Image 1 (cartoon, one colour):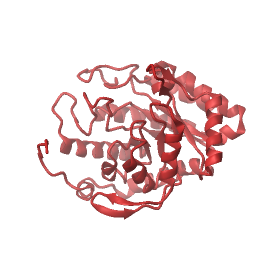
Image 2: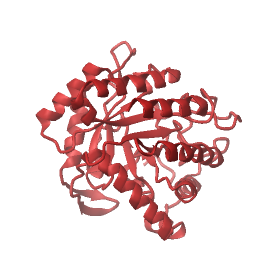
Image 3: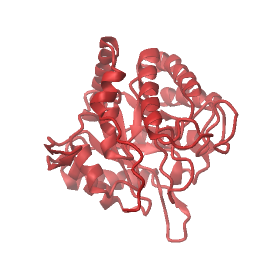
Image 4: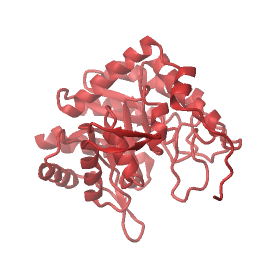
Length: 342
């Protein structure tokens, strides 16, 4: 094999024993799980915002950002439930470049996976202990989920992972909402197949164990737009797109029809500053059609302290080192506007 086996990584059990959750943190997560789950089952008509940096880069800035969300959450809690994004893996289309905190806890130093694994767990734990938020992360590597499984209240499967069988099977064994993004080519049948697979029970190999999942009725769609044959961005958040997805759900017979709309990526054409307009457009569609009001459970928004982005070796505090994000002032205003429209 053309690999250099550097060191054996500790198991999830070992890492969790080294950095455990307190009883208070466990209770906070349990409460958050119940509130977010109730949105997807239809027991609650509150609106979910999965919101935060494209990729978590430094703990101090991420926790600063999330503490600001806490203040806003307390003001809009009658209508909105916030689940902060702490995305600790950054998928790259070609695999080159910065891959996120798991790989490089310090973007300016060489990759260190063990240090990264500890860093991402500590970040999620500190977010939970300091703000009460149990956050969202992307399941880029299915087997790594177990290192954070007691910290997370939401998981996303990316556009490039949604066709992968391991992601689908692992999602079927989780007991929290899992959002399945439409693939970059835009074929919604691929996404619907992934959701169907996640809803069903399966027997498979996971972390060197033969396991049997029970199926996850909280698996749902994320619309993020797509790219056409020429590489141009095509949005799929408009009224007609949501109606079409609703029809697919009706035909599928799946439990808990639901979609979270991603306001960035191909839906915005990577124009991060368009996110407030898109968010309000989605809410308008919901208000116009009661069927869509039931279907659309929330939005996924890329937001950080400062507008835009910088290179991975940049030093500006709270400015994304991956994809551009909406800055805090615009974000705060947007959340209040969404609450007023709901």
